[in-house]
Image 1: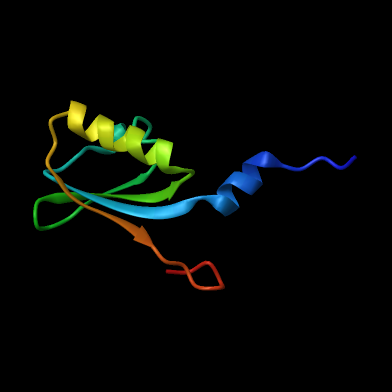
Image 2 (image 1 turned 180 degrees about the vertical axis):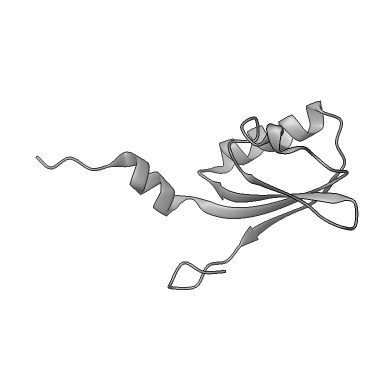
Length: 86
């Protein structure tokens, strides 16, 4: 019986998302948002970017945004090409 590395499997199966919210979040929130990359944009918004393993994890992040009373602007799944690039 062969063993598989589930962390690599999950990373390969993860979808990349870009979530935009109104206002600027500090980097200290990255861990709370499952270590998504936090980018503060010049238009006063924040972009959360990175892999999300499944729809339950996405819903969890969206619930956190709601609990913080942040304004959700958009949620986009990023299509990757065969090389894994957007």
